Length: 166
Image (cartoon, rainbow, N blue to C red; front, side, top):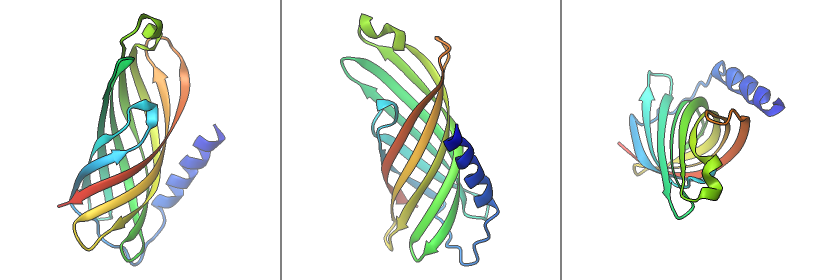
């Protein structure tokens, strides 16, 4: 709980940070985000610039299909982006998502269902001179399992993102 409060204070404080030498972000970026949150793995990632203050919306869709379970994960994050120097940026954000799990084994039936989760996001990225963006971020996720009423499930998600900007 202390980490959640610290993250909230950080994100709120970061929104009031005034960056004088802001580098503009691209209007769109599409690529992959390689992580491990909720064991879903790689995600298709789309970023869209919002407004004129280097803010953006990131949408990620991941899925997994194996012998133990099938799952999908859809995440939406609103991000604030600040320039560090040159092509380096850092960002922070908050959002929510949906995780669906269908167990393929009778021993894992208790895992079936739909999760709603809240997510924070903090990371660093490098914008190359070519239309390539690479990022590393940490996304803590706090889930709410709808069927079994298990609350406050925590899942850390660390990921590497590679996106084409256009």
